[in-house]
Length: 134
Image (cartoon, rainbow, N blue to C red; front, side, top):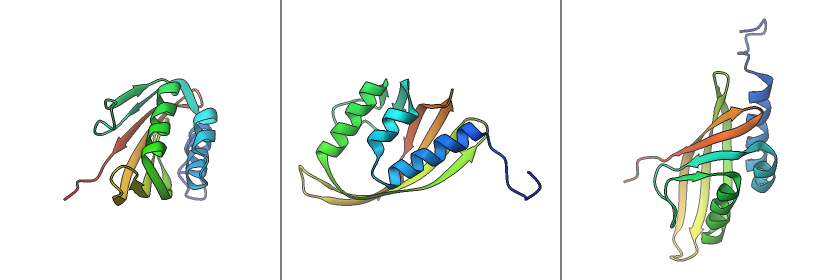
């Protein structure tokens, strides 16, 4: 800890984490993908989503996953709490979402945790954790 009692994390990790949280809270996810993600990043879901598997490799694939999500859901509200920093290279955000599935018309409120790994000033991996339902 420094003099003021604050825990010190790397400037790079803090910058990326704060930038992603800001983009997610202001509807600028596309900007985050363009500026904060490595071209060879990997995205892993807790369960398979849509027609894809759990893992998506490469920025183009992750952009396609985002396109699928926004195409399949009407998003009423998304907020990101955090970031919560860990060590030299990881942070997490807690997402609150209110969406309607366009195919079924079902409106869903859900939470998930995103765990991000930063390497070379860019997000190199993201993993999503879902709550136990039921």
